[in-house]
Image (cartoon, rainbow, N blue to C red; front, side, top):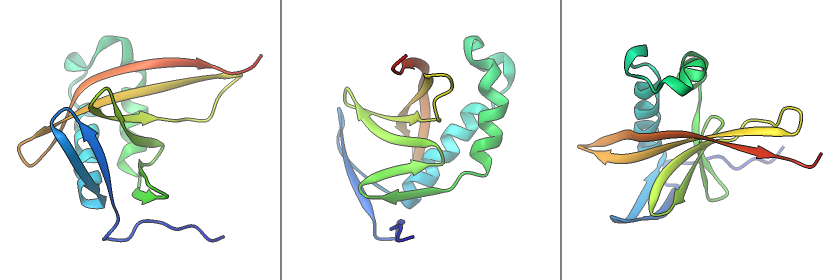
Length: 128
């Protein structure tokens, strides 16, 4: 197996409405902490339609690695993307019965870290 994982010097540039954002492993760790903070907030503050994934995603994230490989930034099963000028973490799980649910966590820079500003799900159907 010849996998190329990130080194401390690996960085990726993303375009956002605020301009270019360079992401390295240290910044991915900050994004992971923001996502983990989102999933570990009190249930009463968590978006009601997604409460069933709150605990499983928090557990998954707590043990997830961050890395950059082949120009793509990952936090476990989450992949960092630029969508409509915003940085978004998208969870790409394996499909189940031809259906895949992609969860999107929109990030915004806050102080010296990141914060989840929005969370939604997209349902993808594969060939029948």
